[in-house]
Length: 404
Image (cartoon, rainbow, N blue to C red; front, side, top):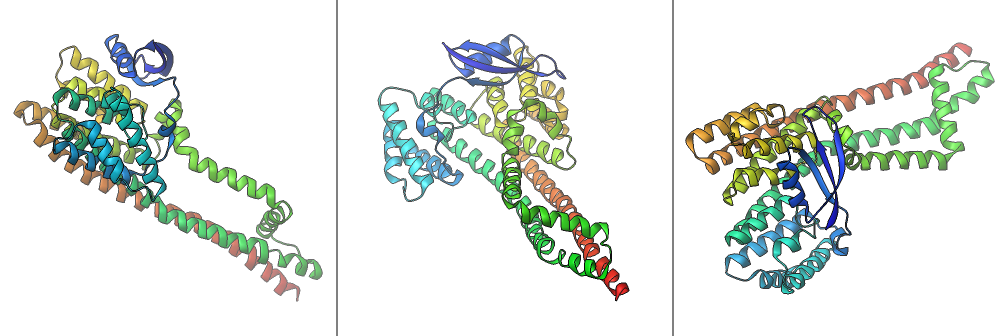
């Protein structure tokens, strides 16, 4: 028996509580806790990962691998031979490609030793998410592994597209802000301090704006190592902020309240939920099994516990639309209306795919909306910086003029 840490929520508005649980696997513990009525947010095993599981593999290489193995399985190859063929054809020229080749080679050896493909995939989270592992388990049970890999490829490509959109959304404002910071730093260090000696000679007094700029300049020139260390720490904290937020459950409810970003996060969660649900239904999964996997498509704990409560409602005999309606703040009213329509018409996959298209459009609109918020905010910050520097330069010039 292995040891796991389970994060649960006993009531809808209650805190997230961590428990130490012993069991065979994360999925077995999740099912056990759900059956006991606990809304499970996360189950993490206390074990060492495979050494290759820590290697970085780019999303582009992951999609390429999924497409390759999908095609080889479609041609009738056994999983072991399909993995071997993929390992041979993967290009090791890039670091990501080399890492992928090593992982696939290790997987081929483990499958050849008698392990199932799903159990092997579970040991490489850098290549297979929890949803992907669930799809492989379903594919091995139904004999349609090629369909499972096709669904995994579609989901990985979709998630990477969303991440790319988010990166591009903040790239331009970040470049603008960094350029402004460098320009302001040069002015503060080399130009503003020149007024001090001149006004001291004329017997004048520097305005507080110039004094502030000179103090900053003195700090930078007298303690460059300290300033550099503080800036490096700030940059490191900014880069690590997303991981820190994900790993601290108490921050999750705060993130959703950030103006603009909270709505964008909800749009991403809802769109991913519908798109992943459509792929799972294509693989003939039942609604309870699909919800167990859908719980892991987002790091946002309130979403995870909402899906867990919906799963418990399904197990008690309620309809999918009914149990999701109780989580409308997370799932979205439009999605719930579509699920009601799907239950009435019985057209699961087709209507889910149409809903996914609509949600993608909504997400694109949210992305553009967030861009329109970010750009003016950056301009306002830059305007305040320019105004401060202008005052620090122009006011001493008036003082010098009056003294001459």
